[in-house]
Amino acid sequence: MRPTIAAIPDTCCPVFRRTGRGARRRADGALRVRRPGGDPMLGAVMDETEFWEIVDSTREAAEGDPEDHAELLVERLLGLDPDSVLDFARHFEARYNRAYTWELRGAAAVLLGGAGDDAFDYFRCWLIGQGREVFEGAVHEPDALARLLDGFDEEIDGDGEELGYAADEAYEQLTGTDAPDLGIAPQPPEPDGVPFDPDDEAELARRFPRLWQRFGG
Image (cartoon, rainbow, N blue to C red; front, side, top):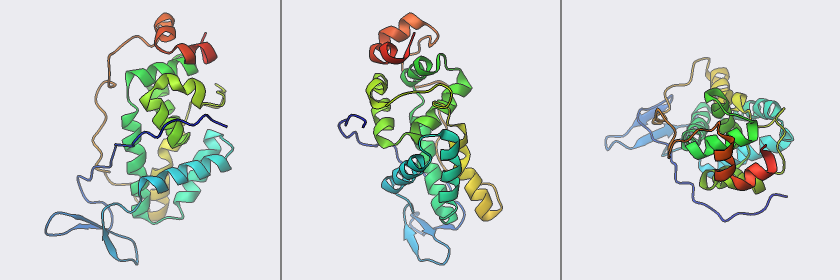
């Protein structure tokens, strides 16, 4: 059982910059999202609690295997309407961008034995797939992954590339079209925080002493 950490508020919210499929704007500018066959309602269809429930339940069913997790996630999303799939994608992308930090890149380098641009991208998808407790704990304190992770197998863990495509794949299967722009601000050119060399093992050991002791070297 993973150690319990103090709840950390999830402050990253989707930003709607243009309407997507089935959406209309009222005269006052508020977004109305319409479920097929349902009544229009204000705001997003899916809240973060439902987002994390979908992530957790599909991961548990996949017994932690990232590829199986992605397949089960697509199947689960296919049971939703297209607008809900887009909301899931917004939640996912907002957290993916939020995890774009130098500190998390360093933590990824410790776990993976190095983390280039693509590897760090896939690591962030995998990190979201580990659920809210692990994700929030890692964003708050990357070195806490030393106690948040039950284990780490470099052969299967740390690469969640397919998880990042799950919502797009489900939306395309549901609608026959590519997903529209999500209205999420793109990630900055460089990770957030103070840059350092993630290939410098001495620096990694200094910055992430617990993670290095358990998984580094």
